[in-house]
Image: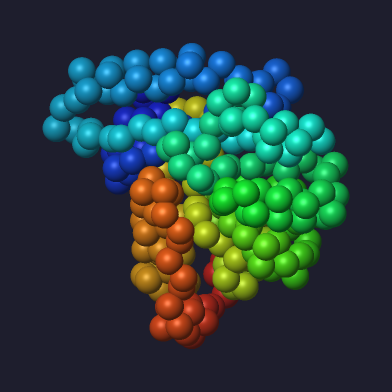
Length: 249
């Protein structure tokens, strides 16, 4: 199934992806980073062996969606990430973090601040599914000021998860508080990979420059382990001028 998911991503136009299994979350602890790397290598090798003219080549990088529990920050700051079984994205200083629905704003502020001070670049996954984040754009902006980055889900943009997540992510986009769009795929049929539909929506609503930044330039910065380039004034102006109401798909 992993091979099929990668094939579908490639056919949809993806040229590189970071595999992000859940980490530190319930039964999906996934702390054996050597095993995760072995799986990545085997999937990539299988893709190469089966490569044909139908599916383009695809780079696969290691990573994890790290669930933040009360112990995470203290353990992470005291030991190398691999020793506690968590993986940054593509070996970079970027961490994909999943906040708990029962976390508090104070804990989120401390998390982002402490990681940023230590040179990490925290990316908060799917804030549209964290109720206390989704309802407060001003608080998202406060986290961004401390160094937080935000990744929303493609199917939230297209309305496949319903009206509320779509409304929330459009508010985030309107406020300039989105840095990445990810498939957050979970299978080849249920929540499959694919970003092209969401990219079309962003380009139509906000302009091609923002689509380029969220779907191409920012992800390339992660793979290169460099800071994100600041959005240009022209891009921000175009995003504002092109915004218009969009129906639910």
